[in-house]
Amino acid sequence: MTVPDLHVPLGPAKTLRWLADLSLEQFEDLHDAVRTTTFPRAARSWAGALDGESRESGDRLVAAVTPLKQVQRKSDHTVSEMRAAILADERLMHGLDEEQQQALADRVGAMLSWEALAAHARAADLVDANQNLLWESRILTDIRPVFTEGNEPKATHGLVLHSLQLTYWNGAQLTELFVTLDRDELQRLAKVIERAQKKEIQAEELMKKADLPRVGTDVGVDDEGA
Image (cartoon, rainbow, N blue to C red; front, side):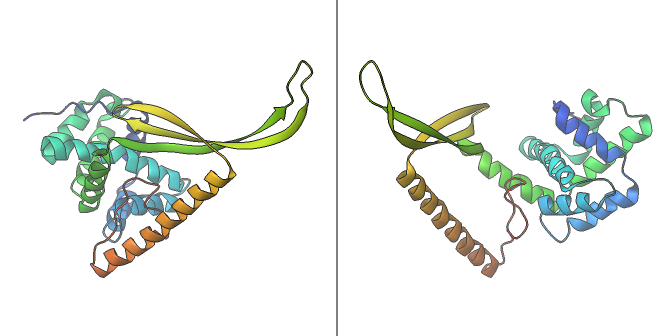
């Protein structure tokens, strides 16, 4: 049996180890949830219902499990091979006793068999096929004074400028792009975004008529009311 090397990062490994501490009933509640909705929404709602947990715990779970499903799909490994890989991953097994290790491997293995997770992973693969993927965006606003010429400059006017900062994945690295906008350009950008949002609503209506349930490409896309 071929065992893939998962190389699970520290953050996702910590999230996955959390599964080993859940009771069987709690994990079965998640299993029941994914039968009726998309994987991100089910995980978020399920985590929000757990004692002492937040919806963000569901977000982290989606971010941790989805890459494992992508690895399985691309490498064509069986669930048994993935389960063996989980047991062989030192970061995943760190700090767990034998019973917890088996519970973690069993639960992640079960999740890899869920169609809801498979659909979410296929959607993530489609997004990953694009060259530049947006990671974060923000707009910085500055006031720039305009001075007179000469040896004794005096501020006579003020200029308001906005800097659109886009952080995106370019291959395997994060890249930043800054674009300067004035008031008119900011308004044009807002109109373009508003138009895209209206098109998205119509696209979702067409998908509903075609009986095509929407899957989120990441946690943020598959939000409440989407």
